[in-house]
Amino acid sequence: MDYLSNEGQQSTFNSALATLERIHQLKQGLDVSTIKEDYIMKYKFLKTYFLELISVISPKDEQKLRPTLKKVTDNYYELKGLLSKPNKNGIKIPRKLIESFDLFESDLRNMEQRYGMNIPKRADARFALSGR
Image 1 (cartoon, rainbow, N blue to C red):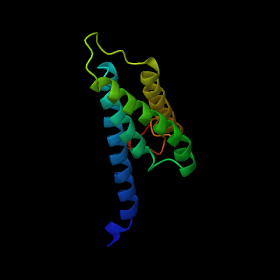
Image 2 (image 1 turned 90 degrees about the vertical axis):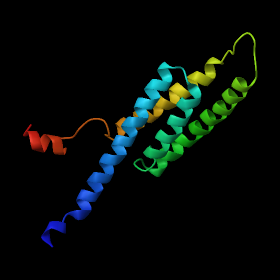
Image 3 (image 1 turned 60 degrees about the horizontal axis):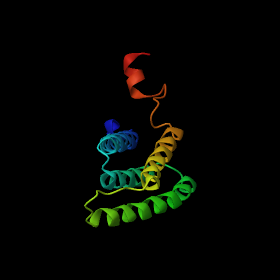
Image 4 (image 1 turned 45 degrees about the horizontal axis):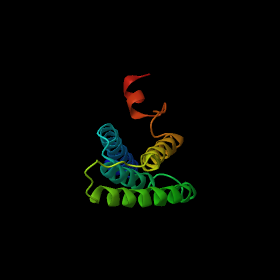
């Protein structure tokens, strides 16, 4: 049964890797939705990104981000309302809505960076295998 002696460590590593992969995919979705100016989809990616990060960040940091999430959610519903009204002249989306999404994305990316989720550490398995 020695082969199971570090099972908990491997499970934690595998879980962390899966979380990082999901976050990576969400950030790719954020990039695409920003380029396409699809702010409805961007909000959905932002909320999911936030929900992924709360499993990693401290409760204190989570509480700091919640008011911003509420503001961005309010802006999302305002945007949905604007888009649902037919308009012959096109729809003018207020700049504050777009900027709130972008700022929240920056906050989330900064929080992720603060927790060292982007920069590999020397103890990272890739360094152990490569001998760097």
